[in-house]
Length: 185
Image 1 (cartoon, one colour):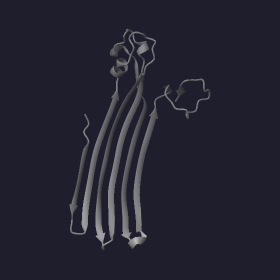
Image 2 (cartoon, helix red, strand yellow; image 1 turned 90 degrees about the vertical axis):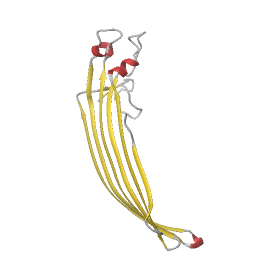
Image 3 (cartoon, rainbow, N blue to C red; image 1 turned 180 degrees about the vertical axis):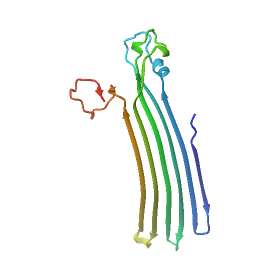
Image 4 (tube, rainbow, N blue to C red; image 1 turned 90 degrees about the horizontal axis):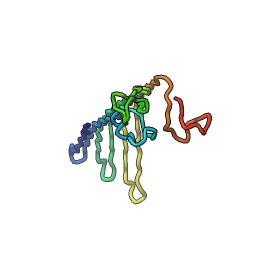
């Protein structure tokens, strides 16, 4: 039961200045266990096809930002935004083999599983600043000038624990023989 936390406030700092602050914390969690696999099992036909994958994913995302806006003269404004964005994600994929269970319908404790076949860790950080100046140039239009600086840090790690047969793929995945309906990773 993950709960997102979002906070936003805007304050007048004076007759020409305004400050807005935003904060977001958004955790996510997904898990597909052997109980989920067996819930989709067709007990009328032990040969029926169904999804046997196991998965566990957890991600925490954070965003903090602030914008200072200042009126310049009667027809322009200057805006500066500073922000920080962070994401940390862990995911693991495995497989189960209900057709090899010693019971029918299979019981969770009888089903062989191969967990953590594919494990991925993803980390992202971004710091940034954006500055904009907008000026109404009479009836001829608006002049807008701005700049942006960002610093990104990416950290990805993938581990494959031996060959992994994948039956779900898209048309762009390479297969030496198009008649084969699986890919060995």
